[in-house]
Image (cartoon, rainbow, N blue to C red; front, side, top):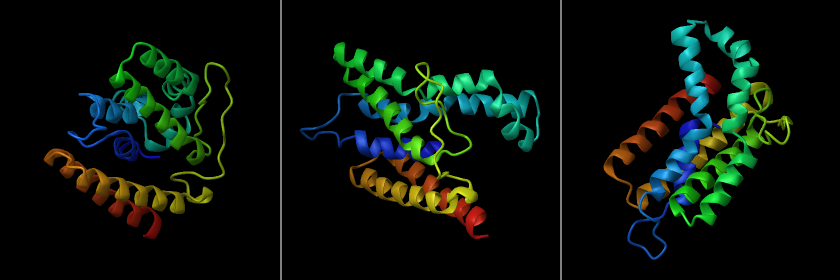
Length: 194
């Protein structure tokens, strides 16, 4: 799943409208958004390093460099369900709703990734196991139902965006929602219809 999708979906699931009886603790919304991003943070660092420092072509980045053991270890750490569970448990023990939201969001990110990664599957059970769940579905690869998965992802993002909008998302967040949904429409048309 694409990183902006994780952030939007996690905010819709874990966030609540301020001022309601179920309103989040101050900072919980930011923690939920950050938790949607953090598992993919090493991917952004990797891409920046490969593109700007190494100056590798796209094909080499994704076919060779992406699969090097050191980067795969970073990706495994950031997508580790056991480590996120430990973090959530410690946050619960410390009675920290903000940290609980952060780790719950990371767990949601991992749960959404499991059924949508084929050849690029992460080691979600690291360090307990190096097992990779190779899904028959990919969020991007047309050879593994990528066009359908991308359409389903976009529909979920539209629904979550509407929910966040109706909850009273701040103006800057609304601009972000419009931008992400517009970009997804253009990219879907370009990659899967064009």
